[in-house]
Structures are given as C-alpha cells and as structure tokens.
Image (cartoon, rainbow, N blue to C red):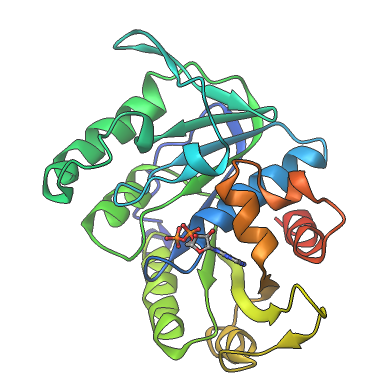
Length: 259
Ligand code: ADP
C-alpha cells in the first residue's frame, strides 16, 4: 500500500561500500571522533576493508587521530585519491578546511564537499564505510542523511544527563529518515586510574543503560575514560591499534563485531 512507501527511497546508496554506518552525537566533545576512529580500526583488524569519512566540519579531527601525513592526492576536481593509514581509506574535511577559518564560512562548503567525497573520490571497494558526522541534529546532518542511504547509526553519549537528552534528538532524526539506530555507545563511562587500575564512576552510573532502555535501542558498549585512550589519539595511533590488548580496545572490538 502507498502509505508504506518509504519517502526516502530516493536516498542514494554509496556504491563503494557494503555497509555505511554513521557515528553521531548530540553534542561535541563526547568522543564521537575517537569512537568512529577506533571502530574503523577494530573492523580493519577483524579483516574488513574499511573507509572512514570525517564530515565533522566544526572539528575535523580524523587526520590527527590517525597521524595522517600524506593528504589525499587531488589529480583534478573529479579525481581525488583518499589518504590511507593503517590500511584504512580516509577522507576528512580537515584536509580541505583551514583550521582557523571561521565556522560560518564552513557551512556552505559542507554540502559541496560531501558531494565531492561521495562522487569524486576514487575509493577502493570496501566492506564498511564509517561516517564521522558533525555533532548535533542541524540542517547539515539532516540533509546529509536524507541524501545518502545509511545502513545504520551509532549514537555516542556520555553518562551525563545533558548528553543523554541529546541522544533522543539524534535517534529521532535517524528515525525520520528510516535509518535504524544500531545502538548507543557510552563513552567516558568510568575512569580507570592509571596508577592503581581502580574504576571510578565520576559521572553518574547507568545512564547509558537507562537511556537505551527508554529509547528501546541496544547499549552496544561502554568505553572507559583513560589516559591511554587520549594519548593514543594525540600520538596519531588509535588505542585499538596501539594497545590491542587493553580494556578499551577489547570493548571497541566487541562493539565492532556487532555492527
Ligand atoms: P567529539 O568528536 O565528540 O568532539 P573527540 O573524539 O574529539 O570528541 O574527543 C574529545 C576529547 O576527549 C579528545 O581530546 C579525546 O582524546 C578525548 N577522549 C575521547 N574519548 C576518551 C576516552 N574514552 N578516554 C580519554 N579521553 C577521551
């Protein structure tokens, strides 16, 4: 029947990847890029071919997280070869936007760059494309998820209530465009002391659990707040690659398996 027709049947499929998964968050600073980078890395270590597209116009951090020194090669406007690190194909706004250019100028650039990333980049076929979306649920995000067919979305949150309230908005946005929310990743769930290894719940405990039940989406996993996760990112090698046997790396690996 006509009423069952998905109004977003026109969403374009990204032809180079079998699975396209967006990593989103209600607000900035919750570790969305860190999660996206480590999930991409975990999938790659599980033998999948992986691409990572960093569309976070406000703080494109993927080049730094991966310590990419060789930027994408631009042959001409319609022939761009993605950067590559640890076997992952990488495209990021960060390669094309001056770090200190005002955010207000970036807005109009966004859709143009997205279109280029989708159409003019010579990607190698891959099992998974991970999208690092800008934080929030503004026009940019909406127009993006309306254009591109996503297989699922992962929402990153921290245990603080403010972030959790934003999760609801994110989930609603994906629902609107008929994209399944695969689940929530609770980041900075607890603090692991580098000296004694003791876990402290410095934010409230159980928020991710509560919220995932309320939204009826699975809690895919929890990532602790550790010095190592941050240091790994700062030095351009995500923790999944630099310390694969660490607790956070194992958690990422489990989450990746469920994607
Ligand atoms: P977002 O993409 O949501 O803005 P980022 O991934 O850039 O957030 O993370 C913000 C900061 O927090 C970065 O400095 C990052 O290294 C740090 N960070 C993120 N997750 C963790 C974690 N689990 N443990 C320690 N530091 C983290």
